[in-house]
Length: 422
Image (cartoon, one colour):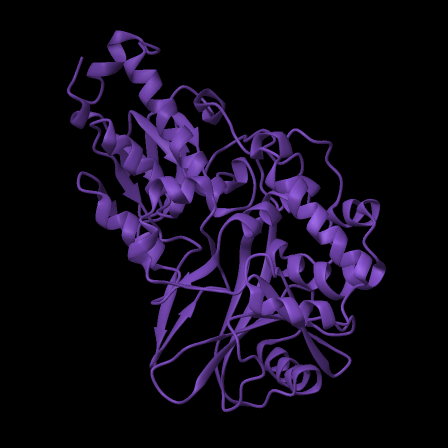
């Protein structure tokens, strides 16, 4: 049997799932090669330098309570800037704050006096927190699945509470405005918000990927390399070259590069994130801003710190629209003034993210390494294998890597295979 480092193991995609797969393979003595179409690692978790500003590819937060995050990231070294456990809500030209005073006492008075939801709603929030705190994650994903909206109605929340808090807050997380996402996913994310912090690395969300890349000492990267097709034992590149591969992990959407894929085509949710410079701030605490007016196109806003006197505002749009870029910018600026009384001074950048989150039903938390196997030599990773979250991306990458490791180290392949390509 050949030495571990001599196996040709390729990972298609240098997103978080692919990076975790490489880390697990390295930990077991293998030397994988990551093939990435862009110029750097990170996938959907990237940050651009635009002038003096660092702009994430879409507004994203890291939930520190994610079990896989605690396992694979050094959270302290990311220099996280945490949000308060609440939100500032803009509705009918007015603003109010609602949050979890059990985690931050400064939110007690604003939450009690908030016009969002009834006193009964606020008691139900406490009850939901208690239920989720004592429920194991694995049990949440075994519960009967329904839409998030139906769950909230059945739990007894008022229409006002749903429309003014839950809908805008979770629309920004699920990237769909109707709360049709699985109730399993809602409970999981809600539990994670309650047990840790929502935060962003000071230097941008891409610091997560950078930290993982630095940890990889035996992995090679092929950047700006496009994969045309993956077969058992071979990878075809768009430039006409092909690579021999004992094993391949596809850590991206497999449908464009695998022929005759059965029941594996991924449907994606999209969103727009636009960045502006502003002179004035409508939010003066580390809170996410939610726009609760039903007629608004914009969903949530967030201010980030900058090196000069200007403030940078990100605006997320999750509703479907057919506006061209300039039309969208004009509409967003108009709504910022109308709903939030925010004047923008300069447009910075628009990110139109067509594959922002996988649109999944029957979402799962866990999978066996054997369940990642597409065929004897090709394995699938990526959050689309489980649920749309950073946690799921990490777990799926780990499981795909373990699928290869189990195949090699538990004698699940024929001996002749070990000498192939030598």
